[in-house]
Image (cartoon, one colour):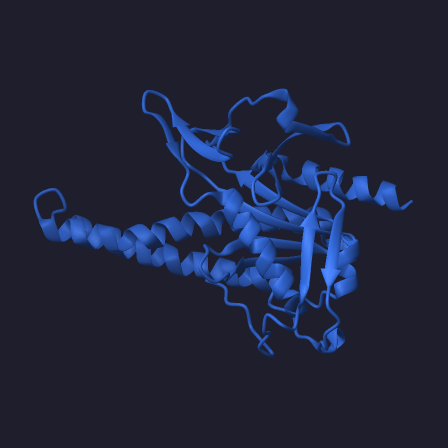
Length: 274
């Protein structure tokens, strides 16, 4: 798991901003003047190629651990020996993490291929207290910020019920179940965390105020988005997107749409600034 290095501790009083998000992407800041460290002197958490290299090392380690446990389970006679089940259970979490790391590596490679020349900064696996790690914080300095959650629920369709603003996982022949923890709520929590800890990433109050923020739920194959009512969709640069409101506004996309989404999102705000 990638850890976020800290040069100093940041208290809640250090960053006294509240961000009000609007559907059209504009935002309002209410702030109290406070002292802040020199952003130019900050050492950023590892990102881009350095972070990608660390993820590759973690993937190799997890592969070795998972394979070793699998062999041990087989040798113990998993189908006739309860010890085999215990050994296999020990590999369960490493296998889940291995899948996550593999997805992060794939997506980071694609993002760097398309946007590294534009100065993108990609921070993976950020630890957020009382939440699952934030998969990716993607920063285009002074242009755009994206908080990205990568999720997969297997062979299922994701449904948003407007009456209770809740995501459900629908499987054939098994009905629908409430998605816990709700990734839309998590994205809202990530936003609050970033606002309080923006100095870790060298982000000034001015950049927060003037830079659009996109919260993105990226569904990984084979998980798909179910069809929804037309008013829940929005169009950005001719791309039709599902836009859901819970703890702010979030975009829900398929992971293979990520590059086109980011290009469209950047183009939208570049056009507004022109």
